[in-house]
Image (cartoon, rainbow, N blue to C red; front, side, top):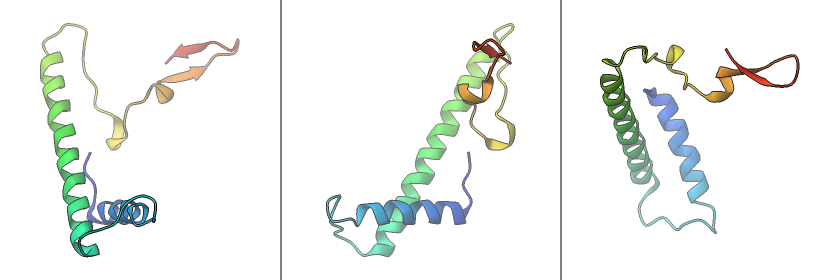
Length: 94
């Protein structure tokens, strides 16, 4: 999943605001430096996630009957979206 610059900036500001709370941490660098580092770490983690997902897809591709599907429009696949309530209260796979 790729983040736009605006989303990465927004997330980094949210993280920085949380870190600035008195009980959480004391910053030893200027805010712009910390914001850049937070954005760098977010980008690095997302890159690792993409590499792992690509490796898993390559590994599953040759298996018969195991066609890995990409999540639609960058949304993560979750069990909650894959399940729905049946009329009798049981959960059924879609």
